[in-house]
Image (tube, rainbow, N blue to C red; front, top):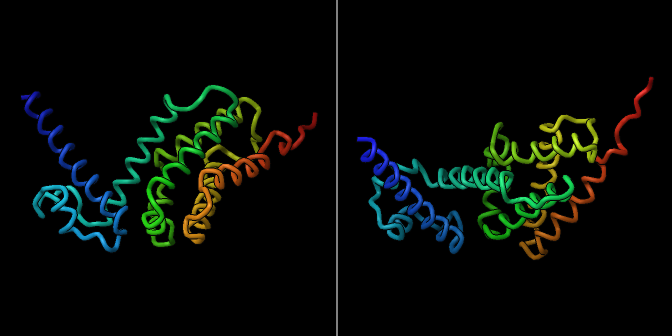
Length: 202
């Protein structure tokens, strides 16, 4: 019985991934608004009912992309970051974020980076928790100031990161987003270095 249940779960996950990947290919090629559900089910080889079983709406595909991104950054924190200073690890994290943005495509990013998208402000997401962990490590090592809690500093940095990506979208994706985001965030991290820590008094 357990084997049968496990097989069903595997098949369901495979079908969901099949739909998701077909949808993302269409969205990258045609844009979110232009890609239709009929085209998605044709490309994924499933019925309309099967599509709605896994995705209540086309917008839920974007929500799925956030969930998968969270898992990717949790894995990155666990085993994908280089050894070395906390600052280097934070910048490696930011570089991976920029690569994700670049590889998603301008049209997709333009759909995400706007005031209608409330996924960005959801609390407890894996992507933010992973960065908060890196920031906490940096504070423990004395590489970043303790003026702000790691979670608060994480929110601060993500606001800045999204602002840079939004600017990149406004520039029609012409600058190198990886170099652009790295440069901005490298300078911003300097503001939170240990030198900004208030001196203690006996």
